[in-house]
Image (cartoon, rainbow, N blue to C red; front, side, top):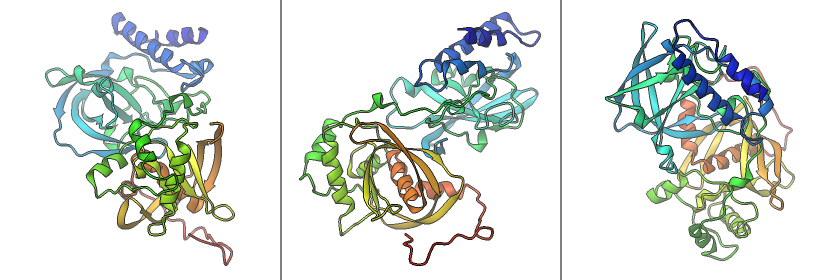
Length: 408
């Protein structure tokens, strides 16, 4: 409790001329933020580290009224996230406003995930970057909450004093969208939450959210013999593509049908007519987090099955290599992937979390299959890499392997 008192005391220091009513409003908002951050050990920040959360003093000049320019028929796009995956958004409106004598425009987005609940559907996503980003504020930007019902007569209030850090600022294990360049403001927004200065939490997977197979999935798994291959969904089929583009859920590690599905997925990826080096459950119509990966980094290059895999770290070193996909017929492309990754998954017998470092071509297979679990296909990565700049290291570093070593 003493940390919360210190936390609130900080907020009382304000600029001259600010109304007490506004001070109270911002103070109450920040107290609610603190309470949500310190909820439990499974949250983003340990209770005793709340003291490292700090804010700029409230300043009403950073509370502005914006005019909304609504956007129709906007294309969807994938916004990169902190864990190396991405989430699908589209622009909802352009917000035009004046701040400190300058005019600015910020895009606000809507999440187009098919699994949004009615309660979430009213929420819009407004991320910001500014001159304080990476200095006094979080290096990956901040967020401001806005809902559809906040708009009135094509106007909406943006209060930068309520800008807050995403959970990734405090802890690993979260998928935080990274603001696009068009959300950069060429001004110092000295309002809202500052950079978190405490120790970063290492968040473990929450297995309590894992689900069992749905009735439809059970029927699909049992439609065929225990070792019979399954139909592989194709992007050329609209209905198949919908399933392939849907984010999958964690599965209860002890669901009795996992073994049957595992056997049938293995038969599918080892089909002599269409052999692969990996397969994900969504490719056979099951939106659960299950994959097979061939381990070229192990003796005998065995296939291994993984439950609820998550990539929790990716190297800055990248590699480019040719990729194809069982779900994308007659196509191969050179895709840039992280050279090494750290993967977490659930042990098949106990559900206990296991973590290991994987490198090279095997790491590529993991990245390809885990992408499937988030509804991401490798052409999405191809588009993404067109928008990024890289530095070729071939001229500076010489890589080699012993003669006779297998190179995928």
